Length: 73
Image (cartoon, rainbow, N blue to C red):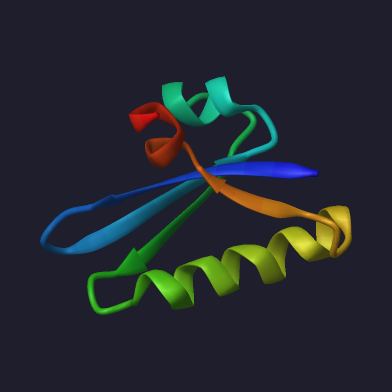
């Protein structure tokens, strides 16, 4: 199962949006898994945390897909 995500960084924090629906992530709509992290959290940490949370929802057969990278293609 693909789970789409987007990370938006600013000087104080990083916001992570994630959903099984790519359009929901792009629109920052609902239902979405929203989490706010401190500015010092690495991308690797955020993705591991995201995977761990979604693993409890969907099982370990998920694949995280960055919507920003999809949009560049």
